[in-house]
Amino acid sequence: MSAPASTSRQSGAADRRPSLSHRLAERGIDRTLWLMAPGLLFIIVLFVYPFTYGLNLSLHPQEGGTFAAYKAFFTDPSMRGWESLWITLKLSLPAALINVIVSIPLAYKMRGNFRGKRTLTTLLVVPITLGTVLTAEGLLNFFGPRGWFNRFLDLFGIGPLQLVQNYWGVLWSLIISGFPFAFLLIMSYLSGIDPTLESAAKTLGADWKQRFRRVTLPLLAPGLATTFCLTFVLAFSVFPSAILVGDPSGSTRVIAYVAYNAWGQKFDYPLASASAIIMGIAEMIVIAVVLMLRSTMYKGSTGGKG
Amino acid sequence: MSATIERPAPTTEQPAPRRRITATPGTYFTWAGMAIFLILLFGVVFSVLVNSFASKWFNSWLPAGYTAKWYGEAWKQYDLSQVVMTTLIVAIAVVVIAVLLGVPASYVLARKNFPGKRVVLLLFLLPIMMPPITYGIPLATLLTYYHLAPGLTGVILANLVPSVPFVVMTMTPFIEQINPSIESAARMCGASMGRLFMRILAPLLIPGILASAVLVLVRTVGMFELTFLTSDSSSNTLVVALFTAMTGAGIRAQQSVDAMAVIYMLSMLVLLVIALRFVNPTQLVARVDESGD
Image 1 (cartoon, rainbow over the protein chains, first blue to last red):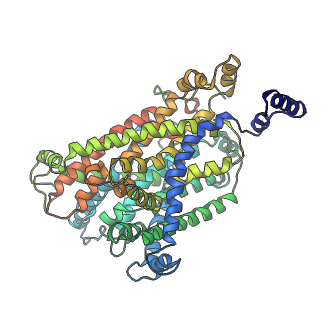
Image 2 (cartoon, chains in turn brown, cyan):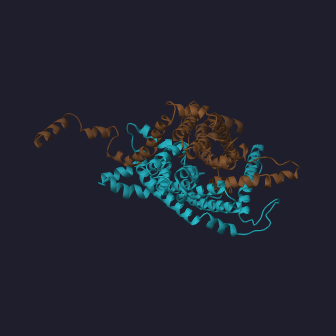
Image 3 (cartoon, rainbow over the protein chains, first blue to last red):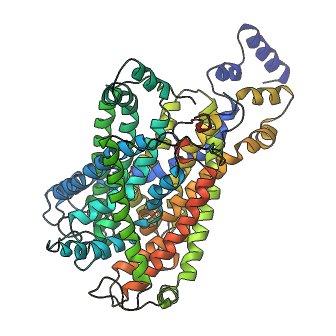
């Protein structure tokens, strides 16, 4: 193809309609999109590819049919898959719910300016720095049979309570580690709600209960759903604390522990991948349910100032 | 919307009007609940702190004596110089790479509308929404297959998986806050994309980049699962070293583990204080100007 011929053809096309790059740019595709390429490539190589690899692996177990690894997870008596799933939900749902519910009145009181607000916020956020091990050590020391808490109860003649190395220890540790996140998120959602809306309701004679139920809560509900999802994700992946302050072979045998055991102790990679994928699916189902409930709620602007 | 990025709330707050002392029962209930929570939390933290200084502590309210020797012992026994070094290398590598990959991507997501944007957003959201174990196990299997794990490379790669999306998610609102007409003006004056980034966007984005960098740093130092799955004894970070010290077999002094936990807490606390200087936590979700109140 000779050069002059091609130029004339191109200019002929340009007469009829804009060039291809121009038309693509109108739909939002231009060279700027290349900026996204490194990040996207990274996610595909290190997240999507391993995930499909794991999925494929889980469907090709060492022995048995395609779904043998999944079947083994639910039926193998040494796996106790159903039980671990149930235990994980029994820990993570209450933990997320408690964190969200407790945060609402606190965040509500923390609105507006008052003395010591910054200090109080910092105090409530400090648990982020503790880490699972310090929390675990602290819970063992503090709530242990000879710890300060049981000593204190002993002063009133209440017998020592078993609060660690079981379900309660892990729940405590989930609340301590999840609370700062729930609190911060809810506080930011609350501060995004225009206070004049409440003032207006007040002018119309609504008492605080009505104002909360009819004005603030509906505006806050989507934020609560998001916060619940995020704290639930944190609590659902509970793993180190279930071992440290729990009873990993019994009442706190969480699904992450089961998956890790199959991977790191049994070296059964198909079974481990299957457990991991079941874990992901179970979590996604809970989130999907919460988000579906959320879609039935108010979706407009929260009247924020920002 | 103003062209400048909102800074964290100004430190010179106006003297707040004093609240009335009288309060409803609900208020008392809330404050009492918070007080109990804080007391329990304080007890949990303080018992570790006391134990890390205790010479002997058996069946009594307070230890029999105090000593600081556990800190030195923990440092030697668990080879903390190396562990701290690894933690630093991993954290800095993850922060730098995550920012370099994440910021350009968040620019595109904040500014442009293109077919398939929802799919891209979902891809960036999934690693944050999934439990680390879920993708960590296939990832660790694959990294081991390619001989990248267990080891430092594997630890850095695995920790990058949630960090890059995290940078994208925290940076997008920061970029949305910059008035696009500034960019248009620069383009009208003939600035190329590279110059636009270096001369216009980068200076305006510095606060946002610092904020997300510090947050990624805090997350990476605290990330247990992914490091645990991809590290060996020579590439442990502080969290994993703590966990193995606490679960490992053998007779060891509880106090030295406590001392190590205190070291970990203090370093995290420093990081958090730095993070709070750069970013007002309440502005992460809804950007609200609190100075007007």
